[in-house]
Length: 285
Image (cartoon, rainbow, N blue to C red; front, side, top):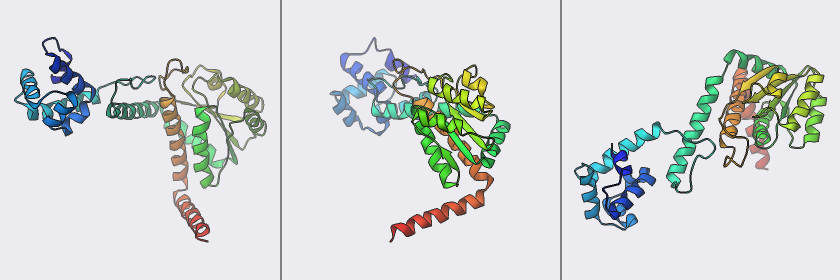
């Protein structure tokens, strides 16, 4: 394989080592580069590149470019991205972009594999019939919840979300039989969230949790648990950011919104059109 040969650079000259390193770091760009462009960015020459391609057992640069690009694309399909450190200081923008794309896709696939559609139907119908939906979350979970709130308001649903923990306690205290309480916590042990959960349990509130930890306090106190596994560490001493947990939670909430929308599809389409027209009319005044 060409990639393996590039990594085994024992017999390469100094210029060839520079070429190999550039190609391995900027793989996707190679297919769009002419031999002269590659020579310029590596401070080599077209003749050096041609000799290098032949040393790899290829006819020349054109043959190399075609075969390497195909091999590179195939290798990308089987590459695993580190959830906590999806890119390194030496990665090109192209590699970072592709790593983030792969991370998003793999995260969503893991979530889908955990879906229990019978359970999701129970949850969606309960939300559909509820007068109020409370969402409890902190940090990135609360940010994702705000997006869900915006979508739900367009369907005419009352959704309570707030970053203030005191107000979250208030939402828990106001919960009744016609309230659905969505609790978002990857660890299932977030102190601020546990306080709300204890209030909800005391009031016999209906709790749907989104968590990665099925043995957590939050999961054990919930009526329904939607599993959101990401293999992401809780600590920022280990991870760069909450990319995977954000994507996973956002995807689950988007699915819940779409399921709800579908229950009254024609009605909701009409509502969306009417509201868009009202906004347009107000803006035109």
